[in-house]
Image (cartoon, rainbow, N blue to C red; front, side, top):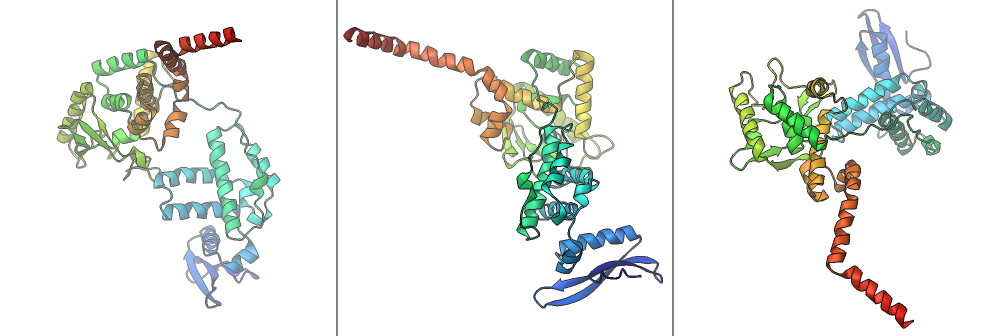
Amino acid sequence: MAEKGKSEGYVFFNKQRKRWNAQYSEYNPQTGKIKKKTKSFKTEEMARKYLDTIMYQKENPLFIEHNGIPLYEIMKSNLKLKLDTNQISSTQFGRVTQTLKRLEKVPVCSKNIDAITSLEIQEYLNTLKNLSNSSINKIYQQFNQAFKVAINKGYLMKNPMQDVIKPKSNKEDKVVRAFTVEEQQEFTNYLLTHNSKYKNVFLLQMYMGLRVGEALALTTSDIDLKNRRIHIHRTLTTDENNAVIMGNKTKTYSGNRILPIPDFLYEHILEQMQIAENQYYNEEKLLFKPINKRYVKKENVNTELKRILKKYFNITDISTHSLRHSYGTRCIESGMAPVVVQKLMGHKDISVTLNTYTTVYDKFKEQEIDKVNRYYLNENLIENNIKRLKGNDYER
């Protein structure tokens, strides 16, 4: 039976075919005509979900007028549009999908967009204060984007997010720390004297600043032994189903870079290339290829690092990202200019470098000021100024 009063879109059961049908009226604004369309499904739930999605995606004015648009549907449709137009990668799509799964069961997100008040949004966001600031930001961003879409499409006259304040987390933000020089020396010595399967991944991160996904994506063709260079142009990532895939680019466009190989790393990279060349079922010639799978999971590398550090060094607050952070820290400690650090690390712009290493720069700020003071003294600038001031006092 069709649902009466829902001629613009409804779900019914076809007894002959034993299937649930979703039928809707598609309006053509150019011709002013309405055409009925039908699609069948195994279950009623599948048919209803399809009907809601297709009616919103087509912006059917009859459906919108009679049924409204749930906030969650706008969030979901906006995310798909971004993926289809290459505004986000499949990895980003997968991450945001996880956020939307959390929001799918939130009462305010199932309400129609025009029935939601600022107070309801604020009350929900205030319940998130025990999450990290990062998680709060992701959820807040989805609300913001959805209501902007609603305003742009004319579904709303006023944006309720204008009166909403993003709450701060009760938790302190996690700070990625780098190895101290002594810790890095000890861990390096361990790697050079023990047979760790990810030894060369760790070394590439600590002494060339690679992201773990960049290291795991390297192939023998990315290594220029003659000129001692490595071309970083891809990264292992995940698709919308959280499966590991080879990305066709680095995390940011600036991540595409060519890095010089440090002398002491040369033999270890050569060793890894020989392993790859002689490995069975490694058509891609990946430097780091697991035996029974196509790609190494980044999580497995991180787990192995944490196991080693806890067991042999009693260190529990270092991750694979900390290894890359250690490289950046050593660069700054050596006096390298921030813009050079930015290029080596593959940061999008200089502000990322400065913000990431604020603590390190602060640590060496006084040393740099001392250099200026010594320069003043060497050039007799301070002494001459003192004499001049004394002379003025004498004249008065």
